[in-house]
Image (cartoon, rainbow, N blue to C red; front, top):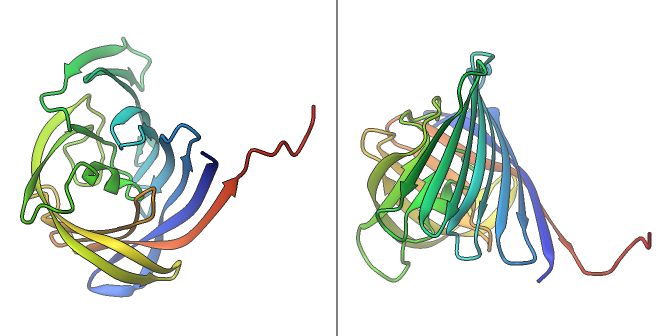
Length: 237
């Protein structure tokens, strides 16, 4: 299959003041020739309270493969987390910011549909891809997240969470990036962020809009460009 590259941005704003919009996240997603997907994201809370660089890859069926997260809090580097999944076992390596001893853990998946959380908004939807679109009502999502905070402000190997997710159907959403045919989910995060309404689009399940009821925050697609590369060799070297 061809290689595709999607480049885009998200803004963040308050649900109580939709006109005051701030740059939030820049992303690049590649749909690789083997069907896997790789997302690279830079997330920045206004004022650089939290700055997060994440690269993560999922298989063609959105099963997690690997990921790297680097975190800054209030301009101070917090360290780096590297994860790899093989045969349902997560190997996680934490590199402390102070150059101290490397911490390695191996964590078996309790459920075959377990997904990994890294906290970028652009592909927060990848966590939902094991949720059936033909089963009505809440379904259980099994998640190993790297942070217990709503804004992803910590680095930890794997915090086990179970949450209820519902698929609500298809809707059309318009943002500054365009008009998109979307699948609508609601994720009941409870203490994390209340209910999250998430609208996703396309083969790569990019988040078009995400509304958090508890924090009264919206993330919304602000730009979106897809390029497809064929197999022709433009240069002969």
